[in-house]
Length: 108
Figure 1 (cartoon, rainbow, N blue to C red):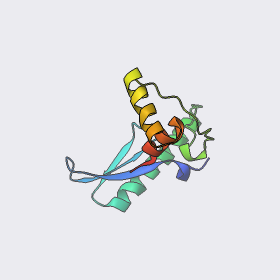
Figure 2 (cartoon, rainbow, N blue to C red):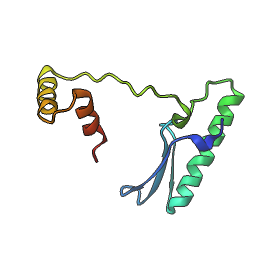
Figure 3 (spheres, rainbow, N blue to C red):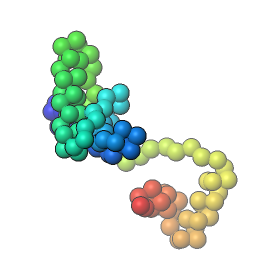
């Protein structure tokens, strides 16, 4: 599996005064650099080295999130009061509770 399929992110770190790059599938790894592109290059190289070490040691290698199959279903637990409020809001919007919650989750 190519390490390019992993979920990389680069953000500015005011504490470090540098960009910090991370990989969702390897939460313990990060890379700091003054340059955003170099931070991404650094974390990608670090992940590739880590995957090689894991492979050499016979350890299981995380599957990239992008390559996984998703059903589109997940369960969310909430309080009865929140459930009631959302059901009322959905009814007022004249949509199903599922559609209403989905619109809430995808709103930016």
